[in-house]
Image 1 (cartoon, rainbow over the protein chains, first blue to last red):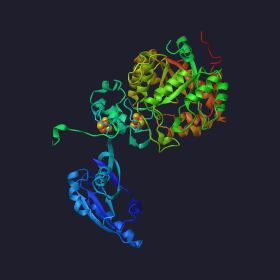
Image 2 (cartoon, rainbow over the protein chains, first blue to last red):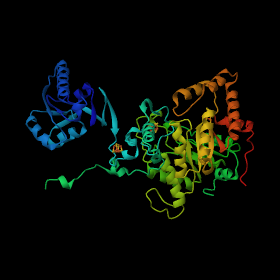
Image 3 (tube, rainbow over the protein chains, first blue to last red):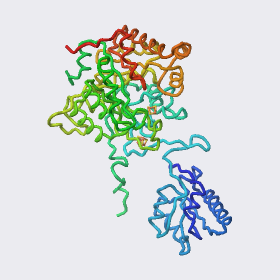
Length: 223
Length: 307
Ligand code: SF4
Ligand code: SF4
């Protein structure tokens, strides 16, 4: 899933300082699962903003709604009835995708309440870890299911670098060295010989380096 | 002869080579590099110019190499894959060759979080092994990374790579070295050796796989100025092993610097006896001026001539 984290309340308050009435939109997808932008967080953010503004003697009116997903036009339709004329600003609590879908659809000032972090998953309650760099051409079959693109701090395809020690990455003793993990895994799978092959340079044009990407699936398109 | 560099010729002659290292300055005046080069040129066969080492912005290694050549010393240009993509790297390599550079050392580069621009983007378009292969393909296949032919005047470098016998996973370090040699490395410089036992074990594995016959292995050394520096490296520099005995030895000495020199000389003499070690690379960080003393004391002066 996409893992995101709430921006500091003061930062969001600053973004909406000119607004008298805002629409706070949550998302029932990834950000609900990672406890950043679901129904509960919408309530918390809206009341915090109201309280702040009350203290400043500039009361704020809030409307709260949480969609099943914000990254889908279908759910944008459901949002329509909430986007009234008197809404000065829409605060989206989705990932960056949701924020943009809202902004694309409505002629309103739309601001993000979250920082979108990465594609990852929960490691334990309250801890999420990055797992995929969305490179556009997966190589996990070559590396024992451990991503060298995003879990190695240098995206090395023929690792490890000289900084790997005691299983940790040179950048920080809290970070596992991806190539130590890859080595251990390939060894336990009896596939170490695969690591001896030189992995050729990567085609980054399939990643963000090729410009904004689009997936077109004619087989599922409705003509 | 692949590149015709002095380093390559001496290694082929079977000489025990000595290289030094010069850290370019954090400003735009090359005089300090020239001064180091003048002092080192009779004592080392070539000198590395580091490429923004520890991710701190310094004069470029290629520009520094030009200063070094002007003083009659042969440069080994370090090139990391941290700051440039394959377009920038190949372009810089063409430029370096046109200026007379013949030795290149390929590295990953320290992560930018260590340096003075920790908020920068890192590139890592290609990795160090892919860089070695790119240099080899430019030289031997006359091709750019994209496969396009280099119609004339291809750069013909003597290709260096690094190996760290002290990094983990230890058992894989020799296999990765083999990968680098398969990719095209002609010579290898190792990480600084303090743990001689582990280095010898590593060399044994290198010999078992015959790698010392396929590439020249040059052992890295760092003369210690003080026990504090040693302690710092032991604690904070990952991929380095500094045994306590060494730190204590420097700490107890009346003259720590002299002891550091003494230790380095002992290490050189020991390394000369290890089968498959083709030379030493002395990294005297911020202490370049000590290299002549070490070389002399180790009995490696005067330096051999190219026959
Ligand atoms: S190889 Fe690419 S697609 Fe696969 S996990 Fe890594 S970044 Fe994601
Ligand atoms: S220490 Fe490991 S994870 Fe970190 S940059 Fe080096 S190879 Fe990658």
